Amino acid sequence: MSGETQRSTKVVCGTCGATNRVPVVATGTPRCGRCSTPLRWVVDANDADFHAVVDQSGVPVLVDVWAPWCGPCRMVSPALEKLAGELAGHLKLVKVNADDNPGVSRRFDVRSIPTLVLLDHGRVVDQQIGALPEPRLRSWLESALPARSE
Image (cartoon, rainbow, N blue to C red):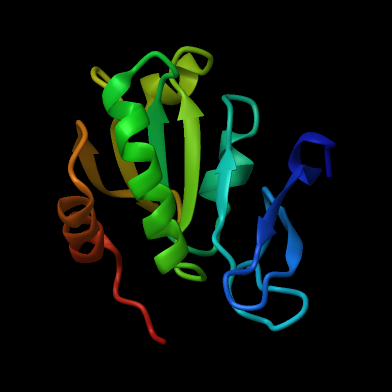
């Protein structure tokens, strides 16, 4: 495994407060090492590691194609991260900077940002262009996500 796919982020468990290392690429879903609660899985990806981070995920992936200068992108980001927390164990949120990663933008024919692409096992399930308020994002995401067993 390359160093790129061994990256991890730190996530604080919302249940017990423990800090956990969550790998960018993993089989299954991340769980708290202390209490086993599913953890929010939010990672950054780039053109080089996108296939490993996204296409090989065992859970649906919401790709957020954004840019740091984009006001609507900055407005929608907190809502996406909140939804990723609510759907912990059932969704992986992957953020891709469009300016730095033209390959991902080409793959999904991104013409406007933010562009959200929902994938399941590497296949596009649905796409949303533009910023939506949190309730509409939640509704879109819940209706587009594949059925899940609890």
